[in-house]
Image (tube, rainbow, N blue to C red; front, top):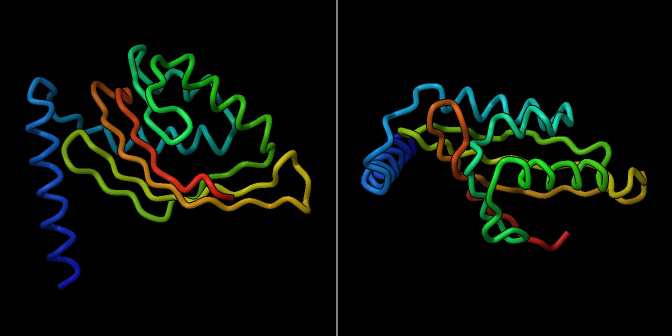
Length: 145
């Protein structure tokens, strides 16, 4: 039963995403692109992250409602790596539907690298990928740590 609901949800999300982006062809490398982004994150490779986002990419999140451009997006990761030097993302779920990749993950590390300041934040991101580049990143999380 759960599989049927998951499949129905994925189909619905695909149809909604396709209707919202009719000009984009399905990017079959979308899942690979997002997995590369998580691997780059865990290496703290902001330059690789910058190249995975399109030049006109948009990031929506609680802290950045409308951040535009791959360099400003990568700069947010540079700041995060400086603030949490041992930051790591652990994917708990990842699914692709058309050009959209839905990733649930946990960001863990220590603020300022201090062992007595651990953090663990659950997030979900919806990525829209076009031509092996992330063009939109809608990330949701609770800002309370």
